[in-house]
Image 1 (cartoon, rainbow, N blue to C red):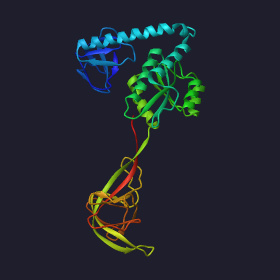
Image 2 (image 1 turned 135 degrees about the vertical axis):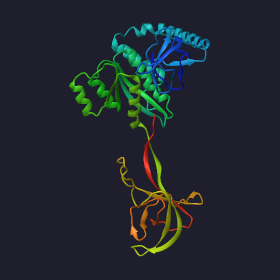
Image 3 (image 1 turned 135 degrees about the horizontal axis):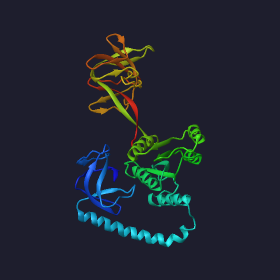
Image 4 (image 1 turned 90 degrees about the vertical axis):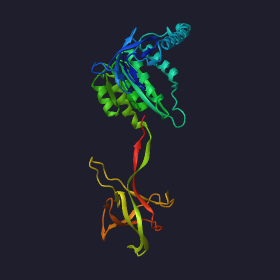
Amino acid sequence: ADCVIRWGKVECGDFVVSGTNGGRVKFLNDVANKPIKQAKPSQPVRIVGFKSLPKAGDPIVCASSEEEAKEIIRQRESELNSERAEIDEDRQVQLQVTGTAAKQNLMMQKAQSKYGFDGEEGGEGTIRIPVVIKADSHGALEAVRDALVGMGTESKLDIVIDPVAMSTGVVTTSDVRMARESDAGIFVFGKVGTADKETKVLAETENVSIRNHDIIYRLLEDAKEYFGKYLPVEHVDKVHGSAKVQAVFEVTDPNKKTVAVAGLRVLEGNLFMGKTKRGRDGELPTACFYRVIRKGSILSDAEKLKASSLRKVKEDVESVRNGEECGLGLVGFNDLEEGDVVECFSIEEKRATI
């Protein structure tokens, strides 16, 4: 069985269960089909040792002993027999509709029942991420659905991955329109393509993303990156440098007002007049602010101040480095004291991860 380790580790000799199939791990192979002794989280592996081949999409769990593995299988067989009894009761209704479309519709209903999808946006604070799923077989379709939905249920955030449509076969204009209306991406697994040129053009025109994969763990990695656009952005402070106030002077500004200027020695990092410098990796300059720390606490009226002046000796400068001395004026703040610490920082956007 080919799988991706979600958490924990798997070693040769472990007892494993998938669905109602079990066995003991005889061999572990990596993606290059080379034998390994242990598999760790996020590592794709092939497990050899099941008594019969597990179904695609069924999770694999490790048991502490053969007895525990057998007990898990017994419980699942009992649950499966109960589900079959319920299906027998509903069979007369289900047999009224037949064909591929009926099977796909039934799969959607089962997904909604299993994962609680009801077309609503979810509770307050819930992040709903719609997806359209296409695959080359019904087994693959269910496996991809469960894997994508599992990303939401396992996330620390309140995320619901909502399959708004799922079917086998090529991507069609109907799929693209569904994705457009629901603001969803289309995830395609297996040997599936787009139906025709019209579908491709429509997807490009409507800015609908079609993402093709034939390896499940690569699809999940791509989905994790794609889902990022739905996640909230957090604002975090990035400290560029700090300096200690050695003396405070009163000067007259261009408007003939008396303002305070701090004589500083930079303790670490850099201080900037208005913006940071362009980074070596092409990072664009960002606006910088200052805050004043007195006796270990940030002053409430000095949490986000702009620099009015930054001078080294008698020259205006754009930045001052670690170990250098300078004079700093802050817009609208004159209550500087000797011994205060001044921090230079910028505010960056950091998108949450799934």
